[in-house]
Image (cartoon, rainbow, N blue to C red):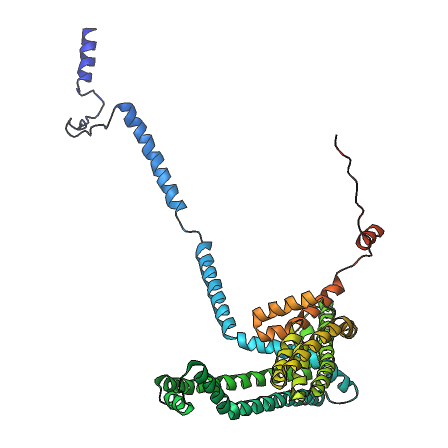
Length: 428
């Protein structure tokens, strides 16, 4: 037993056991080489677990921070849309003048469309019919300008010839009133040799170039409007076919219906206004002849056109010039002209206009006046001219699609009879 225990102890001490190879003992690190734990063993064990979890979070953050694939394409698309918007806005502002001219030409073509269609229906070529209508409109416009130009030229010549006499009378009245000794020749010399007059002449010479450029620009606009309106009127059917060819059959009938309404309302508006302008011009011409007002034909044409194509206040604006001319003849004649203008305006509003415009353009006066103000605010004088036919077309187009119902007896009675007063009981 003792020998057995000794053998076991020796084996535990590292002795060689028979039948087993001898192995070298592993080198254990010394106390100085062992890393010191950062905390107690529980914290160190927990820290190891957190480190593993932290590594997992860092990996997830790296994956989540990666840019989405759609983001670059979305940014490029937004920038491209913004660039297209800026380019379209710049092009629209550059072409606004041309677009306005095309709009005027379109309404002018709509106005002459009925006359061209009638002439074409009788066998005349559409291009020739359009040319003849344009020739008539141009002749009327030139005649109007010539009449007004001759009247203004004669007035200016009379004013220039009578200016020395007028100046002498003014100087004499000043000398008598203020006991001065002014002379017309001295005043003329002082004015001719003054610095401000020389500067004014220089500025006027510069302004002449601006006026010439404005006149040339106006002529170019007129030519542009005439060319587009001629093309729209001469090729009206071809233009409608080209427009309807890109639309489905259900939409083609709607477009043609809107086109016909626009033609009827625009042409009816201009023809009714032209007829009322003719009646107004004849009536005022008779009055001017009776009162012996000079330039009666030109003044009658002026009153007829301005009073009809500027609604509501056009008659009073047109009557200002004849009143001024009549005042030079006799102050009482100016009062007579004013009275006739007011009386004729009432006759036109309540008798003549309802009969002539009931079948063409039936617009409430307040709506017409508001449309003119809105058109002038948007497009100036051009907007004021095309506002009423545009509103009439829109009103007719909406009236064709808005369903109306008959009034009930209660609604009809409430609009025709005054309401009865209901006696309330007295509170005691």
